[in-house]
Length: 66
Image (tube, rainbow, N blue to C red; front, side, top):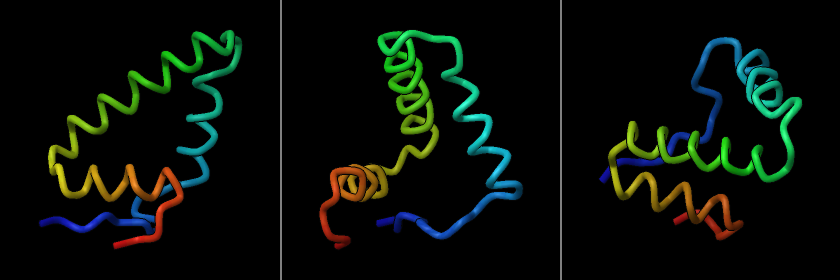
């Protein structure tokens, strides 16, 4: 079973965050939600480890880490 990495793990984390925010600029709330859902599914597929994905779901819901 893999473990979810929650510490910063990418170069230029602030730039990535800014890009994430910019991804939604100029879109309606509905379009922005669709973009977020597509991005989530793309990244979930890339991760491919169900245990890690389940840990991320729990963390996103505010559940205590396992």
